[in-house]
Image 1 (tube, rainbow, N blue to C red):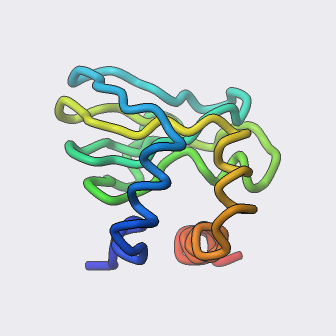
Image 2 (image 1 turned 45 degrees about the vertical axis):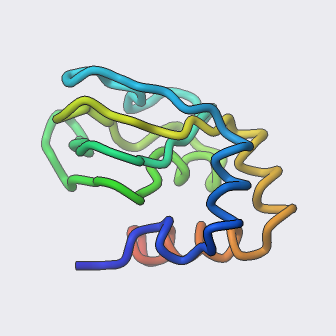
Length: 123
């Protein structure tokens, strides 16, 4: 299994990321991100599991420590997948502006985002 997005950060960096974002709790079955919508937010999963779906077909699952929704922000494009909560979720919500802010403030955050993009999309 690949390492999680969060596993690359120190406890101090995780605290900074957490403080920059907003903690949210979502129920099972909720879809915080929809395919073909603007890239306005990303989430880091603290607890729970989501299904990543393209054209209603599951293409992946993500869990604690993973970031979701970042790809469209990085690419400046509409979302290419929907996210559906398979369990109740505990998340850190990051607006597109907060994601950019963290990328500037923390080179390690920008590097981790680039690694996720490369691992997921080969780009």
